[in-house]
Length: 375
Image (cartoon, rainbow, N blue to C red; front, top):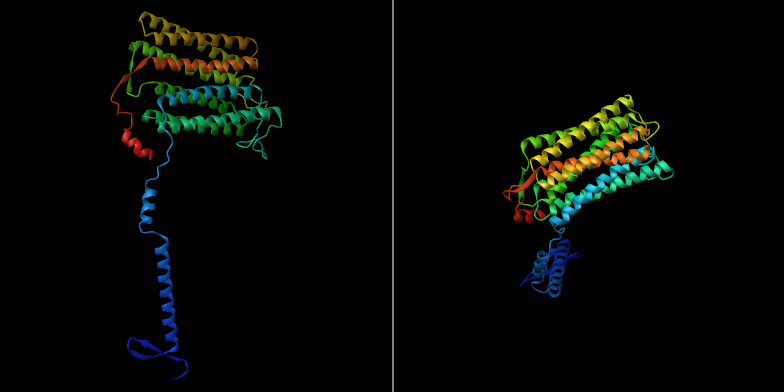
């Protein structure tokens, strides 16, 4: 035979192939042998049916999910939000009354080079207020999450939780804008009124969370005339609060010496505000008398009486602070009193209607659907 060739036996025959073909046959045979060896090893190392058992085990692993929240636990969370939102309004007033509103000249950083800065007295006060304001976002976010995890789940509480969450972020953004515009009185005024809106939603959420799940509707427990009178009290309360912020805008406590103030004469603005308070207290007194004459429910009469007492004390405090040339300490208590007056009037509006049982499915999500959404 010639050099470079090989004889290959195939069955009973003998045939001649060239060198390159012989190399291909040898390579293919080696690959086949390796594959057979690998299959043999796999067959020996993995018992029959083991893969199927492992797959079934994976399919039966429990799905991790957040725990359900009872109505009582959720109601307590709403109370925490109310208390903290009232506290942050007072905290913001302390910042303004100590002239620390621009203690942190930037936002969200305290300064151009530091996120947190407590190097000065004013910076420390403003920084603590910012930290406190941001921390309140935690229970508000928990309330939103809890509204979905509450058992049973209710659409009305979910909607309120989303509104509260959105208003919180709007308040944070408006606070940053207030710093950027050097505490212009319009921004500070809006910041306070938006904080009251947060308190209003938190109070309404607490009230609804305190009511039975089957109470889908609320019916009046007083006459239509008394309800209209109470609505007039609510509207006039908003009017008084707005004028109170205008008095602040025209007064000496702007939060910083460089803050832009309202150019209206303080005496004229305070006169309008004080007169409005007098009318409001008189209107609440008329409401209390009407409730007594019509033998309104005890809860309504008690809430109206407390509202009148708190409102009267707030009015007296307002006159005292004005004639004492608006000292910062009294102004701080007056801010707290304004929030308490608003909370009392808001609660009075709640008490005018009582929950009534309705179709449970109107505002509740069916348990089977809730379970599907939870997974």
